[in-house]
Image (tube, rainbow, N blue to C red; front, side, top):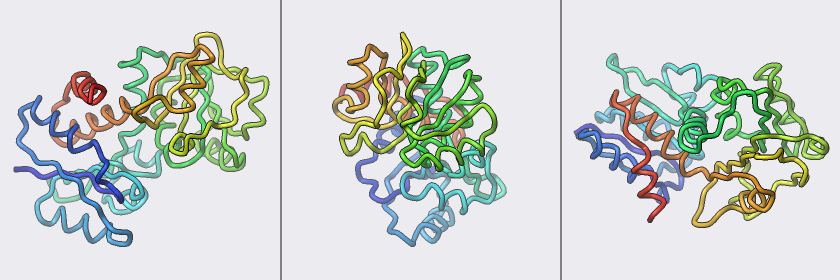
Amino acid sequence: MDRYAVVGHPVTHSKSPRIHAAFAQQTAQALSYDAMDVAPGHFDADVAAFFAQGGKGLNVTVPYKEEAYRFADRLTRRARQAGAVNTLAKQADGSILGDNTDGIGLVRDMVENQGWSLQGKRVLLLGAGGAVRGVLGPLLEQQPARIVIANRTASKAVNLAIAFGEAVTGCGYDALAGQVFDVVINGTSASLAGEMPPLPDTVLAAGAACYDMMYGNKPTVFLQWARQHGAKTADGLGMLVEQAAESFTLWRDVRPQTAPVLATLRAS
């Protein structure tokens, strides 16, 4: 039976084994999928051993996406753009391909599941860390009017924006005064701490949509704020399922249906 796993630290909380088991059952694929908790400093050795023992593919979560980027023998274009890898796939020649499915997972959830259009829209990204860099390339492919990256440390946002060209600009939160956006995406970890990014109340256009890459049992503080200001909202659970589907498709060459899996996770 072909072996797959998710690698991280910690990783016991991961929903990935449940998601991929559902995909495998749905598509009649014979495979196993486990959670591998890798201690700091052991990533290369443990991952090399996994593949040497016949493993076929890995998902990679925090804090190892940059290590996975360095580990891969070859990288997809979107992995190079992201500067990080969340999917490793063993190729027929034995080499390891590194891909990043986070951005396409976000876009698929927003466009296909939520029915939000990004084309021609004014998009605000909150944060300038790996989560935001990982989704910028696929977001740009949707041809928004512009993307603004806002971050507490303005220089990080500016430098990240420069790496992605003229359609992206960066600034501090204070520079958002007087600006209005159609789509706001929270890529910060503020939601994990129950905190709200310092956004002006006037930042949302009429009919705006707000997306939080984080998810939990109840709406995040950011999504509560968005609802109070009349915006459509979605959390990151759909992104998780969609990025998993993209990884599964890369490994098995068959695309699973995400809607029933997402519905099951929402109900549990």
